[in-house]
Amino acid sequence: MGYFPFKALFLFLTLFLFSQKTKAEDIISINPFNNASSSAAGSSRMLAGKCNWFRGTWKYDASYPLYDSSTCPFVDPEFNCQKYGRPDKSYLKYRWQPLSCSLPRFNGLYFLKKWRGKKIMFVGDSLSLNQWQSLTCMIHAWVPKSKTTVMRTESLSSVTFEDYGVKILLYRTPYLVDLVHERVGRVLKLDSIKNGNGWRGMDLLIFNTWHWWTHTGRSQPWDYLQEGNKLFKDMNRLIAFYKGLTTWARWINLNVDPSKTKVFFQGISPTHYEGRDWNQPSRSCSGETMPYFGARYPAGTPLAWVVVNKVLNRLRKPVYLLDVTALSQYRKDGHPSGYSGEHSGTDCSHWCLPGLPDTWNELLYASLVG
Image 1 (cartoon, rainbow, N blue to C red):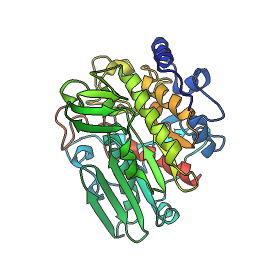
Image 2: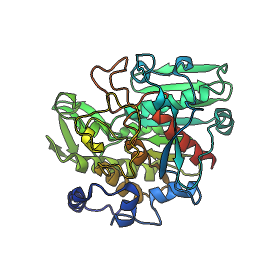
Image 3: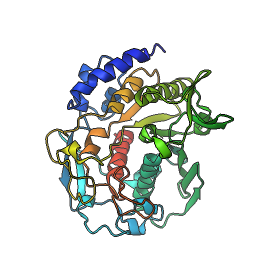
Image 4: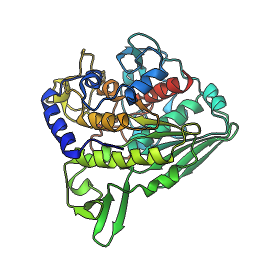
């Protein structure tokens, strides 16, 4: 596929560290990896016509949220912030407003009719779980009396809206590439993606990964990385991420028929553990009740965003980027923090439901119906 050499990628990422306050939109224009004819970001914007849905601002909207967590049967305790004591509700009331247009209002009934008899699958880590539960709640609010069938296992879950034959699945795989148990221990195989057999036959695929690539110490679920016949105790995580995502891209090129399956990649979801990211170094997401309203997010663009765009730009098959990184960075108020029924401590990486993932799904919906 002619992928850029890894050493050159590493050099670019190193140099990019000196420009961390560059906005996501600007990097597309200066990124030497960018190919305008095949740009994933460009493809996603084509779906929106002349409007860039991912540049905008957060507006207070009294008509939000789009559903009530107490009436949605699919929300896990870890995301159900109101149930577990969050005292404020203003974070529920923000709507994403693009600069030069408006997103179509989500219509769950229209969604079900448009995707009647189809299979939709989210593939990735707990951020995919966040978005999967959000979409099922958004739809359920439109058809609360519709018959549903729920199946939950460790690796595969689904909600089926039986009256419409729409099945919305979640395939849990934090790295997309394979994590296997072998004689030497737990091995993350950067060039193997046998998991992909479980993704076949879908009409819509929404992929996500990055959250677990940064885990170290006791929270790291692998003992070795492997590429070819070589085992590595560790390597630069951005390089490992690039290698793994390149393997996923090859799988897409070899296995996806665009006439049968539409593919999206959920952009990098930011965390808000470090208040210095929004110029409040003594803070974290805990206690935050309002978005950041500055013109440009102080922390700048995550390097993982650059890697995602590099890989998507070189794909031969159309994969549309839900470029949620920048708009999500502003939502320091949207995390469960201490109001989670399953996470101890402060959770500044996942999102309350209702909440930010609803906007990700509004963008997905706009891309599908626009």
